[in-house]
Length: 379
Ligand code: PLP
Image (tube, helix red, strand yellow):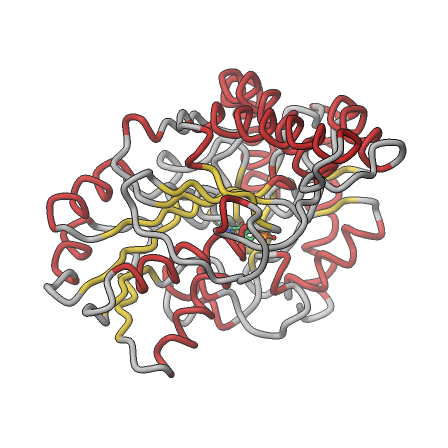
């Protein structure tokens, strides 16, 4: 298998599995129990909280464990709206993940007003557009750092400053940054920041939300006293411990990420552009993640192309894995190139340092065979 879909999910590293294993077997106690068999697990949870906090440079007490980034994103927006009940306006962008966009749609039905800041043809957001969208009524700005479909980066440090200056809470979906780039909330006036373990070699089903110590927070899951009363429910110790270990490894890896991955991504991209007529990169080539390239293949149905690649053992996707079963065009490509996104002709390739040059060469060959074959069959 040639796995080129690391923005969808990543493998659990052996070191991560190893630290989790005891909590799936012998250490099955409840961390809330008062006897030692259970209560000793609290130490493991707090250790994982320290490790996750260190990944983004915050205090352990500012980390709330969740089940995934969808939950983190919903929780952050919910907390901000409850914290500013007199304000009824939310600002986000047209290219966010469905966990933000679909929650915003639901909030619109409840009477909130939502502004979707546009992006340009390169997927970039102009901070002037963001500034123009803010008003006295704006409770929260929710914007991603790196786009999951194109890898394009938003100017998050500048956005955070703008929100702070305007007295608006700021939530950042940093899911695609973890393990790929440094995140230091100590240098960033962000109120909430979302992470999910499975994008940085932890298992699926565990995430985290950073809540700045002075940011408002309201529970959305009422229950026991877990997570300091912020999120009821017995903690999934094994997954949390796994994410803690993955956070330690990701911190080390992110330093070398660009140096290791850029040459592979660039070779794949150049190989495709050189060998496939009319293929074109979607998104800024400079302001983007080092591991991602999103390429349009005009007159080729991306799902058909993905099927041919799958038959060759190559994994890639046409957009977010969460929407892979939908017939809808990519809202990200559509926002960048109105009209173009209506046809599903783009494929996202997202690499990691575990990919090899041989894999890249094989992928280029498979793509440059498949695209003309599909075109000759009418797409
Ligand atoms: N935000 C972004 C940018 C993502 O890429 C994803 C997953 O693809 C999510 C949020 C949702 O993450 P999860 O699957 O943990 O809910």
